Image (cartoon, rainbow, N blue to C red; front, side):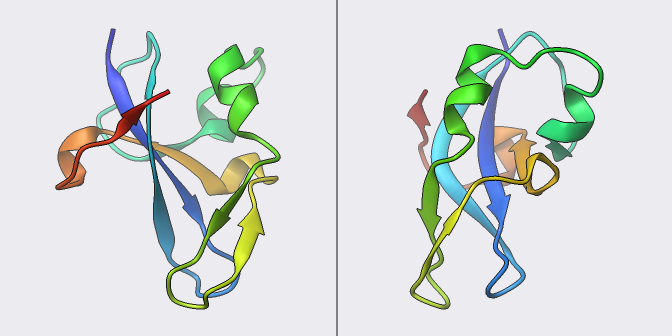
Length: 88
């Protein structure tokens, strides 16, 4: 089962920030894709549902922001990041 890193678009600084989580799903992605686009018209897996509503930290602004907008939460193929992710 493919694994993808999760990132979110920050409303404060306008950049995408890695959440340091990795998600396993059956989909095969070649590039970054929002969960809104990926699961449009069908139910989201429980792992994806668990991410929504949590908050994450912006290292640029120093503030937290909530993960509420599915169009701004992304699954990213892991080769784009140079770090280990936590499996979620």
